[in-house]
Amino acid sequence: MDPGCSSSLYFGSCTFCSTAVCGEGTACRAMGRLFHNTCFTCSVCSEQLSGKPFYSVSGRIYCEVHFLNSGAHPAQEVCNSCGYLMKDMILQARGKFYHPSCFRCVVCRRSLEAEPFTVDTDNRVYCVDDYRRVRAPLCAACRVPILPTEGSTESIRVVSFDKNYHAECYGGEVNLI
Figure 1: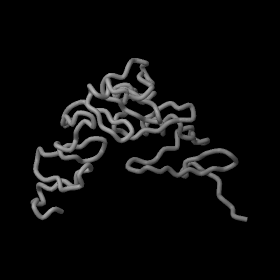
Figure 2 (figure 1 turned 90 degrees about the vertical axis):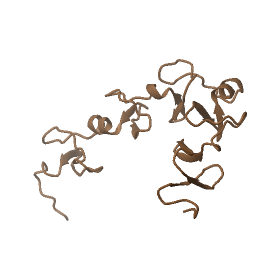
Figure 3 (figure 1 turned 90 degrees about the horizontal axis):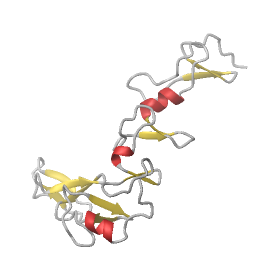
């Protein structure tokens, strides 16, 4: 912690200048990192971007004007989901570009911006809950998906003769030879 900051006003170190971020309203979070408002600027014109649309390409940050006019934007200028031109915020996932509102679970259609997600073998995007429900193995005894119990991220299953079972549904004994 910086000696010039009280513990209630110290937020961490600025990603750009590596000095302490102290005081409410002096910094912003962008791309999961902390910046002083004065350090979070367009790499072309130095306009402060805190609270404004910005774009990050290859580690450089751009204001909207310079992103659209400088050729810094990626060759793929259309959203991978809707096919419309990318003019505002861009979400990049799986090496593709999306409008944040277009990056959604294929089952529940919930926006996955800043949410954990997973992809199946056909490159369809799922929220974690729906992926588990849709892609989880079915128990051969009760025909219910084998899912983690509430509050857990792991499930227990018994596999016998290429069939899946909940541990409580598996009726046979396991004999070790």
